Image 1 (spheres, helix red, strand yellow):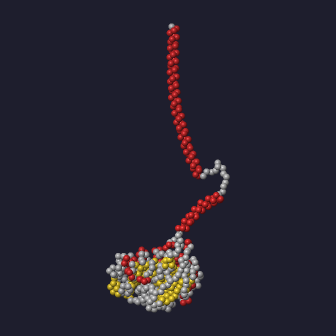
Image 2: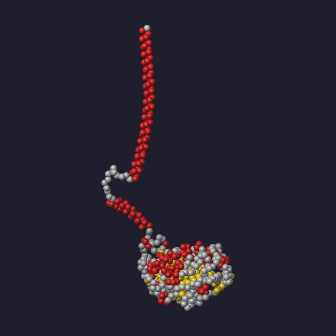
Image 3: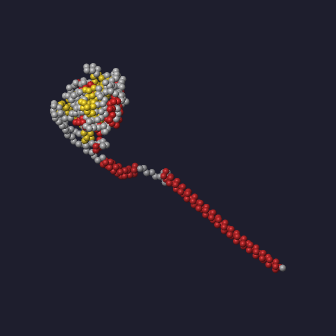
Length: 568
């Protein structure tokens, strides 16, 4: 029976009849001759209205990881990642990028456990060069591939676990116990965002264009209570006799939503959710490159659940459930405890594998192996001294505190009753349903610790620097200027003027010329006035002289007349 993927948008959960595990969608195509790709979605209702969505994309490559010819031709396996594996001779690679904290006491065991921040541990192929140098080059390559700050995983944050991390894939017994080829590091402060999701998507066979990956809505994913990206590469066996080796690439995305915070939340005591309400998108088609695409719903918490559309397969399993971190088993458990501490937190070892750290070059490494008593609670405590750091070692937000890596707890469960993850000897959820294993390997992480170390007043160095610079500029600057200056005798007449002086002279000349023009104009005006006055004066004198001449003429005329009269 087949279901259209588009109908999954209408899938709701309402109590109706007891179901434990349901397979909702199967889509089969002819797989490639060398590669096989599977995509699966595991949905589980948690306490307090939370819903777990675990995506798993598995690529199986029928080739040996140790052969050079393997990475010359690619089909479904991503070439960008294959080139990195081949260049640095990687046997196994496990990378997780997590935002948020998984609440084990309320949500049980996760399908893929990961600490907050970024975690990376790698097994290298034996007899290959200097592992420390190869590790430094590998983290830089992965940093560029996944757009993460993995380049900060230097020697000060890297350890060599002895017991906590064994190979998860195909490996010989001698190789598994040789810890020289493993490196582990974690960055609990690293933030996971969209720029980490995009390169992770590009490694999928259909990317986010088709299949279950079309549900990846960055706005919804990074608004969730818990979000974790995982990438795991390991060699595996293709058959029970292990005559054919292969390479398994498993990409996981775990996200926890809380639908009760929206309008489609918990109504009248029932959980009401759909794929579209959680992701804001619907599934329209399966990835054409996948061998099958399946969706599973685990209703362990809600025994009565109604799903629409109805599932095509119902399977009852003894796995699943919620289990607290305390040992509630009725028998003893052997537990491996591993913790990595920075150099500023010295500890006192007691019956443990302990590697002392070196200041600013190597962290402290602590591993404990002990047995948890049945129905008991074990408390681990350690003493440390708060130390001052160099002022250059403080981060910009020093008052926020310093993060301490999560502790790692590894054990083997005697039963799968509380186990929901894919077993180590399986690759897909479908294989885990028919798995009859009696032992289940479990690894969980504690919360990261935030420690407040003595923090100086960073404003005081600034004040001291300003004061010192002022004193140097005033006191020493003048003295240095006088003692180093070279005095030369110069003729002031021949002294060349600087641009400012030239400008001043030009302005003064212009001002002087304007003043001279004004004075000359005033003089011209005065001369004109004088000429006018002279003309007027000369005219007056001429009139007087004319009058006198007239009078003299009249007098002469009168005298001549008298003489004539007298003579007569």
